[in-house]
Amino acid sequence: MRGRYADFDKLEVLTRITGTLVNVSPLRVGAGREAPLGSTVDTAPLRVVFADGKSVPYIPGSSLKGVLRSLAESIARARNMPVHSPWDPEAREEGDDGTYCVICGTFGSTRLASHVRVYDAYPEGFFAPTFVKTGVGINRDFSGAQPGILYTEEQVAPYVRWKFMMDIVNIRVFPQPADERGGLLRELLELLANGMVQVGARRTVGYGLIRLVEGRYDVYEPRDGRLAKVAEGEIRGGDL
Ligand SMILES: [Zn+2]
Image (cartoon, rainbow, N blue to C red):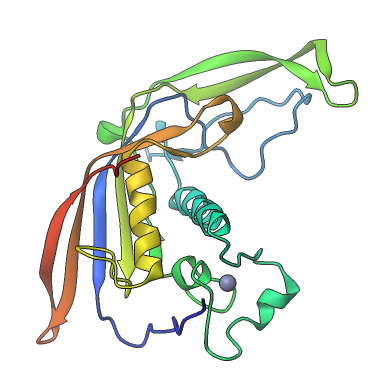
């Protein structure tokens, strides 16, 4: 079901989600694509570098938004809602009649800005210990371990706390979702609170599992030319 989601001319409602993400398994969000298995490159988490030369890992908002979008796509697919790749030629026509699908109407497309902004997540107190793991390279052609090819991989240790912030513009999610997009975003936040979302590398072996704790929402609406808080509350995991 498509909707008229190009509504950025007027701010009607702003929802700010805040909380703490805890990675309950090792985590590494790297730059760009993962190095292919079997290569000898070393991999390390993305880091923000301070003026004094010290650095600390962080989770880019674009990575968090990316996993939320793909999760939303799988939920939509499971419900037999049409889902398209952003590069699908047919999808380029989306918007010609002013309507967009639920996914683009939430996370944006080449023609529509995103209604969701996820900020970079930095570790609390800028403290994120890492460990280095040495692995054996796998030869893809022969699908077996190849002795002699070793790689080292730096991971953030589990149970680091990351500051989480996300803004949602003109979609009502709390206290009650007003449309499909609000319902979907609410489900995504509940999955986060249930520790069911993964980000970064090595997800197939369970790495990068994150849980939202102390999650809360604050809803603002324009009143007499300024933003006024109209609702607030906690975000808890849903019943699974
Ligand atoms: Zn779309």
